[in-house]
Amino acid sequence: MKVVFTKPVDSHKAGDVRDVADGYARNFLLPRGLAMAATPDQLKKLEVQREAEAKRAARAKADAEALAAQIAGLTVQIHAKVGAQKRLHGSITAENVVAALKRDHGIELDRRDVELSEPIKRVGDYQVPIHIGHGLEPKLKVTVGAE
Image: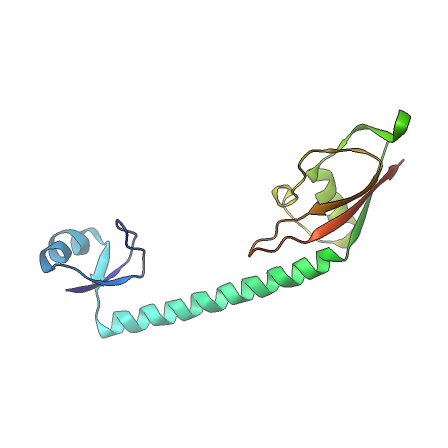
């Protein structure tokens, strides 16, 4: 019997169309709502859903690429109190970078998208990678100056 899986089962993902034993489908998959019989209507619905998902994914990737291109050319300036030898009193963290990006350019990101290996503790220019998704990681120029 041919079935369309509605939920992941063992090595099958939701949306997979597979031939399974009649008893397995009738006694296990169908009563539990894990799969539906693969009728022509169900197959057509599945194809429409896959096309819609592909369009959504393409739109999301295009949006991410546009954001990456926008971020790649930006510079953010952060001012902090400085002590001896151009060391900061405290440090610049991912939250500070996100706040400065929103303040200066109106771009909102989550602090977890900013990939600082360790907080910035000195005055200077830094290239900070921003994780956007879809394999895109533009670098934002962060300039830390004395207050």
